[in-house]
Image (cartoon, rainbow, N blue to C red; front, side, top):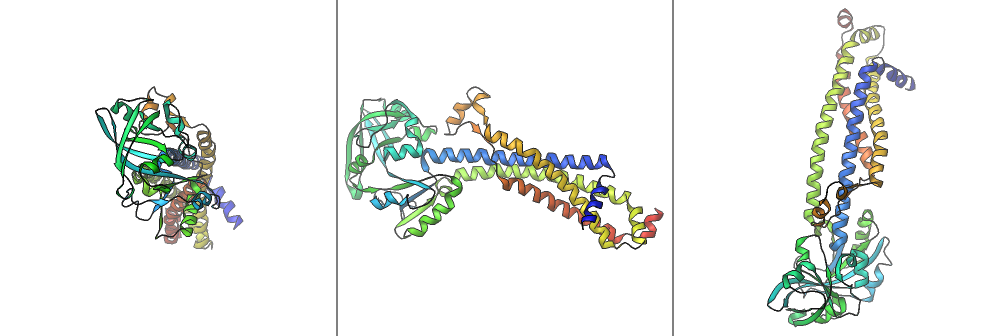
Amino acid sequence: MQMMILLAWRNIWRNKRRTAITISSIFFAVLFSIFMLSFQNGSWGRMIDNALSSYFGYGQIHKTGYWDDPGINTLMEYSQEWKEKSKKIKHLKDLVPRLESFAMASCGNQTKGVMINGIDPVKENALTKLSGKITEGKYLEPDDNTVMIAEGLAKQLKIGVGDTIVFISQGYHGVNSAGKFVVQGLLHFGPPDLNKMMVYMPLVEAQHFFGSEGLISTLILDIDDRSNLPKIISNLKSQLDPAQHEVIEWEKLVPNLLEAKQAKLNGVYIFMLILYTIISFGIFGTILMMVKERSYEFGILISIGMKRKLLAMVVMLEIILLGMAGVVAGIIGALPLVNYFRVNPIDMSKMEKGMDNMFDQYGFEPIFPTSFDLSTFVSQAIIVFVICLLLAIFAVWKIYRLKPVESMKN
């Protein structure tokens, strides 16, 4: 077998120019496809991390039925067991509590529907970096009886830090909820919808306002790395009673984000399909020329007793080696390129003035890194290997149909 591989390797370099052109075309196809996939995966990974870490989290725990019909009456207890559970599950940093419900906010003659978020200020800031969104005023303390509101909401209600805002809502099990609070800080959110409706108050104060002491609507999963999420979700589901609690993954929380990512990746796959189709025709042309030029040689070898099976195997090895040479060169070329843009991501805010504001409007950082995922490199090697195997079938078919006398005459 070693002798056959050596013979196949020498044969492909008998026509150096053609071999160099074929390997170069495979090299650039592999290089471009790896970089494009890495760039798309890395960029969307960064966008997903930004979106999830800003509010939703990578997963949420609710009382069963809350996600299908969210309401102030579908709450669950926030016991000491929940506070300790994160210490028992590997890769789960914390469970961040929230009490979320809607209310009417009023100041003077201005009224607006808002979403009140009762939070643990320390845990919430560790998850969403909420203090970094403050544009005026100061961040909440756990025992405050004040609120922070989105700056877009503040403009609509024509209020600022130090002013009083009134909330009216329906509390737990029909309790009338009403209260007035001093605005302690203003927050800026990228997405316009959030910037016009978000209100934050300490969890204890929110529980008192809604008449739901000791209850919460949501527990947000704060995890160390997105890749560990399936293990964490599986561990949580095994410990929780599905009749009492439901665990919702981020794909269900923000399905539009996942659909947008898949749509973009489909575009990349179409480009790769076109790229590899062109490469396939290039390799096929090389095989056609090789079989045609060497038909006299094949006829002599078969005439002197060489088995067609061995001859077909050598030719197949030549084609596979040709493809693998291009793949290896492409992977070697892609490794430093992908790693460089992983460490030094593309920053769109430095490329064009105002670009950072456009991305900030949707809550994303204008930074696009690549993803250094070995599976991306391996998948390209497999694709080219399969292409070479399929195209090699033509050469094998020609060898088995070859008539030695006719091939030597021609």
